Amino acid sequence: MIDAHCHIDLYRSPYMVAKEIESEGIPTIAVTNLPSHFELGFAHLKKFRHVRVALGLHPLYVKEHTPSELKKFVGLVHKTSYIGEVGLDFSREGIATKAKQIDSFRHVLTHISERPRFISLHSRRAESTVLEMLDEFSIKGAIFHWYSGSLSVLKEIVAAGHYFSVNPAMLLSTNGCKIIEKIPRDRLLTETDGPFIKIRDKVITTQDISLVQKYLCSVWNCSYEDVERQINKNFNQILLPIKNHKRGSY
Image (tube, rainbow, N blue to C red; front, side, top):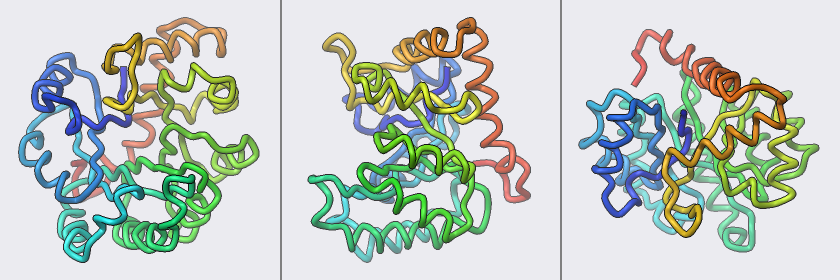
């Protein structure tokens, strides 16, 4: 299994969750919402083999995108090839801060475009703008986390060379299932977005990714093992240019 987007630091016992993931050997991208959160998590998890802490600047935390946090992002970006959660949110919850979000996202893209990165994106109701900004900075192979936009924009994202990470909550809606079914096999990753999702009244764990993989068995008309192999292949395809880069792969 692979968890391409998990907020480990927001679980009740983050270090215990990380240790369990590490012991199970599950590749996990531990996204963060602010550079100061990354700094704290990195100090504890930098020696883990299977967990990678991602440097984030979440659009819904825009009020906390202070000059200090923005400066900290620049100071920390050299430490990791993993970026997230970053992006834009033009939903009812975020639309009032649209201009500031765009400034912050541009700040992020300016400082991550010089080399290959694993980039986990928030794009709710802002899918087209996120895609346009990625194109502006010539960024390829980014991951649209929990995509909920139109199928027409989905096609544009695929054509631009990007990926999608999907979670069990998407299986609970007709739109979520339609989106999953339209994502090409070679552009799909799995995620939990833990701890924000609950499965049968329990906070999601990595093992719940199996629900997505079982669903993909029916959509792709293949075995569970074939699904696992494909997702692993996709994940490694994103990581390959990072690993090949002369500056290393963390």
